[in-house]
Length: 482
Image (cartoon, rainbow, N blue to C red; front, side, top):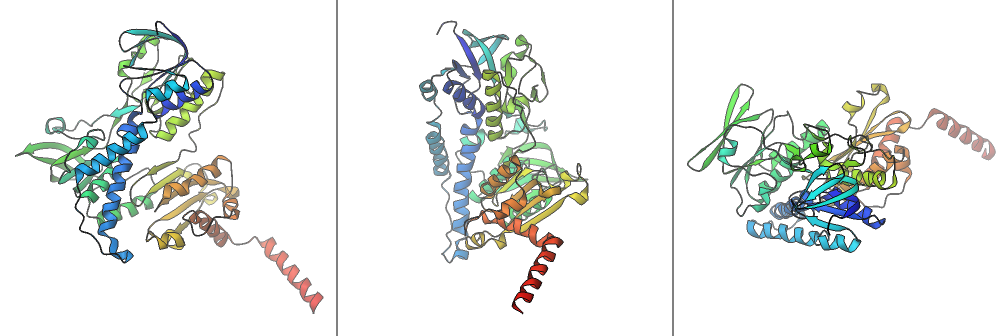
């Protein structure tokens, strides 16, 4: 390839980098995609894909144990953990076949593995040997786990979301440090597969970014399934005795010792930028990652940073969203800006949790409380959820003046699928009343969205002028037919 020159170099082959390279190649730009080892990033190899495959196996085991409520003989499930993990890796390989270097070379992009290092703001060294130049650069190197400084943690040994998918045996007793999405998803999955799971969470509740009522319902479900929750608690130290790990947990003035066979650390991440030699290009950073403006530009205007490496929300779909904006701005001299007002996310626990926009407590920090209303409907009022035996959960919509949708929280079966309609509505300023006027096929789980719009109608009723108008029509009909 020699000292080749490119229109665009994309550093990082995760979801953001693949999106940027795909768009760049399709519009005819000369693109180089660079990654340290392989394409697909954290999402494919150790994040979204394998975790959801593991969750699916765990859900099947749970349903088999609890089949009696469906009139089916329950099964005393015997989990073959090696086969479960083989299924996970087979699924990863199946999905990953669409994210190979050959795939992107077919699109017209060059692909090089070995990592990139800045020589200057227009020159990169690839794999420690080859130099290339470019007009524009998009950095999409993502983030990685960064374990907390708990005394004894490193010495005792632990697993993170990467090592988890290399386990060959299921831990009999597992302590999960962190009650965020990863801790909750993997904690419940491994519990359903047979581990005795304890979650240690600093905050007073699981998933503290969610609506408080959502957290409470999830905590109740976890406890029903036999998981131990140590909330408002912190692991203070860890020791090993006779091959048994001991996690010392501080909760208020009390110290609790939890014996376990393995520790899953599900807190702490940091941007992957250390090996890039950003200083050689004059790129500014802080402790969260690369500094960017709303156009995703760094302080060097032709260099962009997207996804986890810029310290923003750590979601695959957000990284893809930023990549689209960055490519548009880089290749077409655009001025598109990211908007952080509408960021949806889903936590794949059971029940599933989905969220976009503001909670009520967040909304009243910016808007007079009298102008904010909550409309909530339990899934027990959605016929399909009842038929599925999944009526635990609810939808809660926060609405402002003029029927403006400010935020939505859903917990229950396929909550993430119900959320998409609300994201679209918020993006295009569609009112709650308009959601209710749309026909929602019966009997689908999406009818929960129509039902919450009905709740708005029942809560606020019909405007007075409408009832007066009906009264006038009724009186006129009586006179004409009297």
